[in-house]
Image (cartoon, rainbow, N blue to C red; front, side):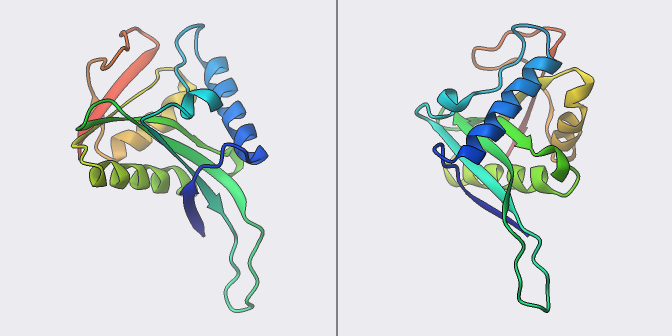
Length: 163
């Protein structure tokens, strides 16, 4: 079972997940080409941040498994109608269980409800980022030109879609 809530920047589990996200993104990318937002960056105005929690609810016996932090994601407003997906990350042991797709759906719905009509993102071209690129492509994102303050280069890909 998955549950999404507004992210709590004082929760040690959230801080550790974000630190892992930034560390892995930087390790997988050439210097200066990883744009993952850290804890401070995610607290800037115009950014919504959510965490997704996983529990193994056992049906029939009334017991709930302990809830664990499964991932996170953010939405940065670039303009009244354009948003950027930021800091999507799933805990390694929960990948392939629908965590990222659920968070992406949540972010897309939040963007729609706030009047956005376009969502964009930046991710890496390295193998580490292949699952992310595949996820976004499955959800209708296609390659686009760099947006906002980004500069194009061989280590980054930009994707976008209308919502």
